[in-house]
Length: 295
Ligand SMILES: Cc1cc2nc3c(=O)[nH]c(=O)nc-3n(C[C@H](O)[C@H](O)[C@H](O)COP(=O)(O)OP(=O)(O)OC[C@H]3O[C@@H](n4cnc5c(N)ncnc54)[C@H](O)[C@@H]3O)c2cc1C
Image 1 (cartoon, rainbow, N blue to C red):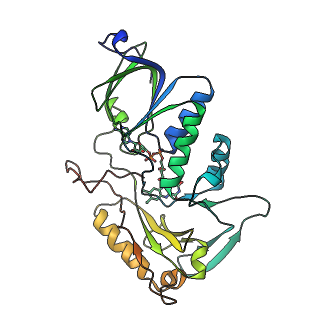
Image 2 (image 1 turned 30 degrees about the vertical axis):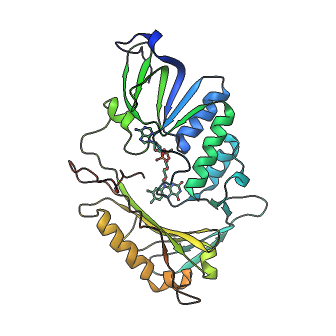
Image 3 (image 1 turned 180 degrees about the horizontal axis):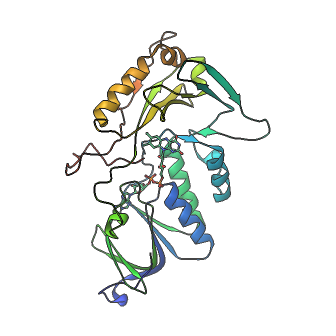
C-alpha cells in the first residue's frame, strides 16, 4: 500500500521507505529482499524472538530453495533435521515410501522458534531494522505515503507498508480488506510428542478418511521428538475442542502408536501443551491463553 501520511506533520515522525509488519517468514523474506535492493526497511513484530508459531515445522523442496536464496544457512537453525524421504499411508492403510533423489536436500523439519529467529537474523544482516516486541496498532494513508502507529503511540512514515502479520492480519483489518465473518478455510492442530520409535525418524503423511481432503502428519525433529498434527477443512462444529479430541484419537491409533514407538521402549509422551489453532466464533474474544489462529 502506498499513500501520503494522513493528517500528520512528516517532520514529527521517523521516515523510511518501507514498514513491514510481522517478522515471520513472509515478513523476514520481504525485508531481506527490500533491504538488499537498497531500501530503508523497518520491520515490526509484537513478539520477541525466538517465539513459537503453531506449525508442522515441515520445509518442502520449494521452501528450502527459497530459504537458500534468502541466504539462510541450516547450520544457524539448531533443530534443523534433514529428511530423505516421505512415507505416505492411504485411507485404506496402504503404505508407500517415496525416497528423495540423492545429491541434494529436498525436505527438512525445523522448529519455527529456531527457523524464524534465524531468518530475523538474516534480515538484520541484510540491513533491515527489526524492532521486536513492538506491535502495529493502526495506519493512515494518502497518495504519497503511509503513517504507521505502533502500540507505544509513536508514528513511522513510509512510502509502503507490507502486511505480513499472519492470518488474522491487523494490517488487513486496518485497510478494510477483511471480509466480514471470514474465519479461514482450514483448522490445523499440532503437538510435539516424544517418539522413540525407529519409524518416527521418518516423515509421515497419513490420509485418514474423516480428514480428507486434509491429512495428518508426523514430522521428525532431533532428539527423539516428532511434530504430530493434522489439518482439516473448516466445518460447523470443528472448533479447537473438536480438534484436541481428534488429535488424541490420532495419537491413540495403533499405527500411530507403532510409528511413534509408544509400546517400545516407553509411552509416547506429550511434550508441552496441545497447540490447536482454529478460528474463534464470531464476536467471541480470546482469553490470554488463546491467541488467534495462525494457519
Ligand atoms: C498446525 C499448523 C501446521 C502447519 N504446518 C506447516 C508446515 O509443516 N509447513 C509449512 O510450510 N507451513 C505450515 N503451516 C502454515 C505456516 O505456519 C504459515 O503458512 C506460516 O507461518 C505463515 O508465515 P507468515 O510469515 O505469513 O506469518 P506468521 O508466521 O504467522 O508470522 C506473522 C507475524 O506477525 C506478527 N504479528 C501479528 N500481529 C502483529 C501486530 N499487530 N504487530 C506486529 N506484529 C504482529 C506475529 O507475531 C508473527 O511473528 C502450518 C500451520 C498450522 C496452523
